[in-house]
Length: 508
Image (tube, rainbow, N blue to C red; front, side, top):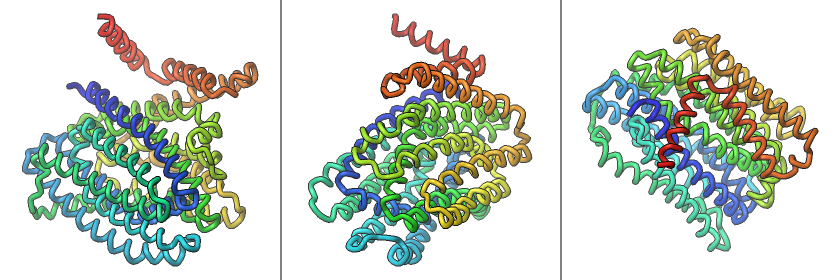
């Protein structure tokens, strides 16, 4: 199967997973919010955020495992080498799980009980939620090498099926939770832990039966161990900065405004995550090919994938989020019924941040493929970490919750420019080509779309009040602008030929 065909097939499989999960997750979130209540929902959100603060180790190592496994596949490494890489990564993940558990039970537990703003009478439930989240996080650490090998082999259908099962289990939890009249936060935490354990066992069973290299064998490759730890260590700076500023913002909002604002942010971030899945699924299908092309020395193909995935990812987030941005109030009312204060403004700013973030992911994957990421991660991570101290100062000066997201947006734009200059030095990535094939076409599509929206609002304001009519018209026109302006000529020809081929199949 050709590269483009494989990417298309994997993307479609991931989209099926995403659409199913999104629909079920949005409904489940509404049920959970109504069952737990805004206060308990906010507590679970912020307690889980404390756990995420300690997860930067496993996130960093997961990226390293993914990179090394995919790189070896790109070089057509033998089974023994693949098994050595996998077993070494599992050894490291076991050490990380132990470390996360120790840090969580000491520093994390102390912070929860003495610094977090938890309402009176809720501390016992908050500690139950914390312990269940901590153990689930450790289980997740051990599952990462198995997930990495599935993605490296581009078995996206398996990844999708397991994810769908996990989502169905979460839906079942939402209904089971309704059977309890008290201590719902405690039971919810326990049930979510059970799901993480089942999720882990499924990955182990599948991988051991499918990939011979996933059968653990004790190995002592010091050079590989050192290289993977070094890569993960430098990558940890970037992941630490991401977790630091996202969860740092969450903690700052809790300290200044209490758990109700955390609930508003949690809902906005969840809606953002659902929209971002469109771009992540495409990027997930492309990422292994970026690394494999670099490993094989096909730099021209790698540049093409980076530029194309950047544009396509941006357009996917843009076109999906347009109707929601224009009528956020209605969407949230239909979804949740009761909408916590500030949720609407949080979401609108966060979605603009997402549009910048999806452009950064292909560049980050390009840097990961190269492997020499020390300078890249130090500079990128250092800039992003500025979000938290600047936000703290801003909140001290003005008690306005959304100021932290405006600061995040400004620094995200600044960081994207820095990434481009760093990759220019690392692999001679052409800034002129990036501006021409990515940014210039994105700006033209944005200008044309927003001009059309302004004209529609002036000439036919009644259309803007109807969600479905407005969404259909705006998405259709935006799609037309993307097709005519955002895509290259060969990409338009490829899509037209595919559509003709599909029509011909169904006609026969």
